[in-house]
Image 1 (cartoon, rainbow, N blue to C red):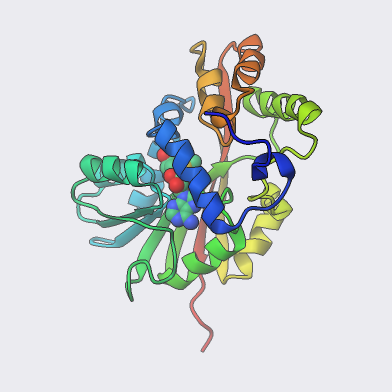
Image 2 (cartoon, rainbow, N blue to C red; image 1 turned 60 degrees about the horizontal axis):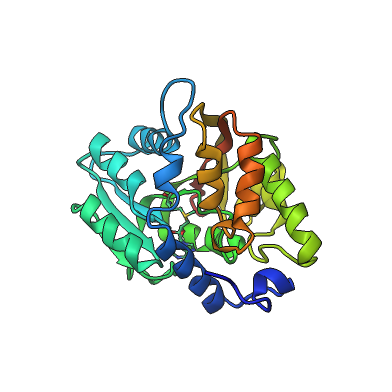
Length: 280
Ligand SMILES: C[S@@+](CC[C@H](N)C(=O)[O-])C[C@H]1O[C@@H](n2cnc3c(N)ncnc32)[C@H](O)[C@@H]1O
């Protein structure tokens, strides 16, 4: 697949939400289970992958029978890990990409999973004891709006558990991405992903501010790395990262990755935030 030269990726134009979802659809149709198929193979020093980390956090936080929603659940690896640890929980998921939702429903039949974009009305009047997102926030069309919707859908005292890329820590992954961006900008000077650019998401102080303005109090921030020594994995991770897998220039980008491929390290951050109870 070759993207046309007037595609928003090359022109620097911010797409509208429909174009952004169209882009997500074409990416995920090309790479079913794009994220889980590679990220689940990267592990902490203790042998957990990042889905295990988030699932263990949720499992430890929640009372019996609590209701949990995963936003941008993809093919539901996180929901599956939560279901293994806590079969008593009521699990919900939502994702805009139909092929991954079909896989998610097969993988976790006990969960109710919607194929739609996330809105405050996605589950009617339902409210959740916890909302999770794994490698979704802040890479969404409007990260601040996502936090606002999360806050609206949480019960007071409810938790938001988000695993996200650590945006300031250097790694084989971030260095290759930076090189790839620089090389693409020689040919396409405006090249970039014109969503997900809220600079506040790059620092803990900025994140705290983004969360606080939606009544979400940052409770814990845990930085952790997942890695593998397996050769070739860095290329696989980059191929499945937006938007590289759809670019005509992909072979050149993968060559950059292969040059430094003596293993892959992905720095991540897990944030647990609580919805503040309204002041009486
Ligand atoms: C990088 S993937 C992560 C998938 C999954 N959480 C995982 O880690 O395996 C991001 C997912 O978020 C979904 N997504 C992004 N914006 C969304 C929105 N507004 N509503 C629903 N899903 C969304 C995408 O379709 C995609 O499946």
